[in-house]
Image 1: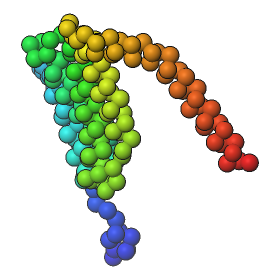
Image 2: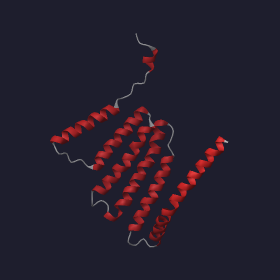
Image 3: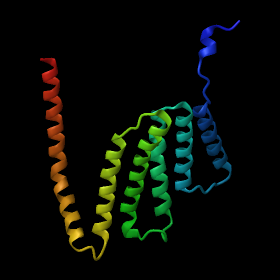
Image 4: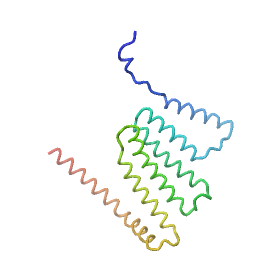
Amino acid sequence: MQTTENNTQKKTFPFGGILLVLAGLFMLLNQFIELELSGGLFFGALALFFILWGATNRAAGLLIPGGILTGLSIGVFLVEDANAIPEAYQGGVFVIALALGFALISLLTRIFTGEAHWWALIVAAVLALIGSGIILIEMPNAGVLKQIAEAVFTASQYLWPLALVGLGLWIIFKKRDTQA
């Protein structure tokens, strides 16, 4: 006889267990046969796994690494092939690809959980600006844009610590006001 508790339990696919089994089998197989696996393919497979797992369970906590790993996968694919992107621009392109992965988090969480994680777009925008700045600095004929990017990067080394101090003070005073 089944209880009503057993009837209402959510059946989920054991993605975590499958991931561990596949990783273990891959590592065991790699002991006997040297497999040349692209880093981009590896990150892409992990990304797909987390996205499928998060989508089926409607869990944002699984979609977040799926988005980040997707960005890493794209970045690694683009810089692995030395002919795809000139070496001087590879760092900036990689950071922009990572920005795309963070932007994907907002889309995935909106689609599969009904609530978008908008914070990821802030991270994506910052990464995209940094990646674009890196590319501008590496461009030989960027002119004024290169000078602006260099000035922003130089100023940011002083502004970030001040921003952290300001944020810390804001948290302290906000906490103090709510306790009073």
